Image (cartoon, rainbow, N blue to C red; front, side, top):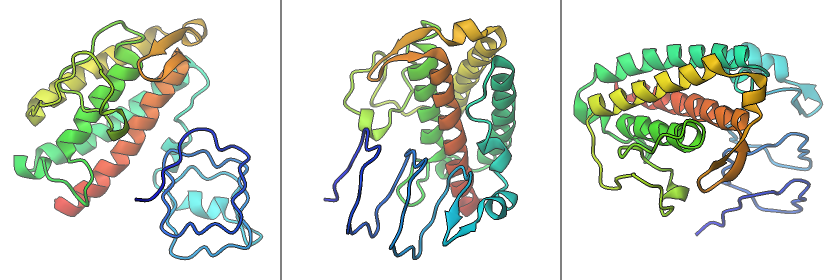
Length: 235
């Protein structure tokens, strides 16, 4: 099996490494330098800022053609007002996606594309992500049983999770709506001081509240992208 690398690799040097078919997910490549390399049949989906390829700054070219670019830049806002703006835009895009998904037959909503989560599973995972990073540590509300953990967290004993759950799309969306309303209220009442408060996130340890919120934004954005991509092949 291919090796997996996680954690801090900042400053690492890869010399003469065969990285054909390698996958980089949730990585920070700020300041990375690649030289004497073959860059063939490569697909990158990322926030692009000052990217130079073969001496050519391609930043503007990429961002002008990326329909997701404005939202990409808003995932780590500086203040509560920016957080509320980001969340409103994410909700608006998700409303469009949910409307499209709920118009499909239930078997399609549960269909996997290329081994990825189905739409129902995606929404269940977002319930879990919200519970893990905000509902439980920040709001002191327990995990909902229908939440679906990510693969790497499958064996962690999160309280209240039903590993055998198989909720309907209506049930999952109702839970998501409840979590979204709680999150909206949290952002409405947040201050700079409250965002700096440190909470303990199960499995991940102490984090400032603002970093927990940023994680939710990242989860919402990327799974929105995945859901739109997969729904486009089924509708």
